[in-house]
Image (cartoon, rainbow, N blue to C red; front, side):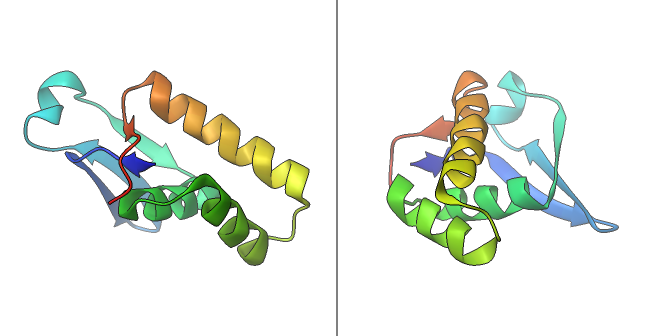
Length: 91
């Protein structure tokens, strides 16, 4: 999985904001504010990552059980797919 090209994550005054650039800005002309977990997931998904590797990184970084981590990842990925931000490409 990978975030599609055309989206950039920026941190402004400690707040993580995602916006579209280039051709993607014609499709999406808003901004998304991410919490710390969303920022963590976005950064890894921007690089391209397998689900199981993302789960391992989440479990290592946060004090949560596997079920909670899976639910958080699944919810985030679903929202990304629904809004056209995610591709199946790895790198």
